[in-house]
Length: 170
Image 1 (cartoon, rainbow, N blue to C red):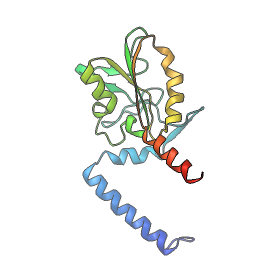
Image 2 (image 1 turned 180 degrees about the vertical axis):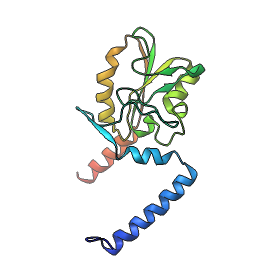
Image 3 (image 1 turned 120 degrees about the vertical axis):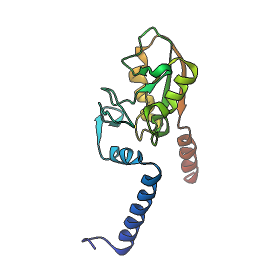
Image 4 (image 1 turned 90 degrees about the horizontal axis):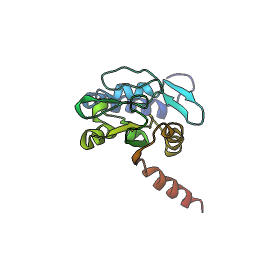
């Protein structure tokens, strides 16, 4: 055992490694998402953000560290690529909105919406974002567009958890 590590810590660590092995056998793309937890950048007001310019089969990020959306006919949609006047839908929220666990950019919530509707859809969420961070991101980038049609907020579970935790201390 390592210095300062008790038997229970060692057993928990072994169990976590076995569980990750099972996860990776079923979902190999999760290796990348787990690596992202160790490599993030500091963003004012948002705190941690995804690294910019990731170019992997499972995940691509733009200069802002935002994941791209794949629309109909393979159109790549990012904050920069959607013209100011074009009607746009915005997806924001927690890690689910970001697409943690997705096998590619084309299988995220924002991509599915863009493919189904045929409209430009931009993702303004990040890996491990909470709703507050997503709203800050929304404030930074939503002003680029003159015609926001729909805003999808994925991650309302946080509101439930916040309310539940707060009620324990009343």
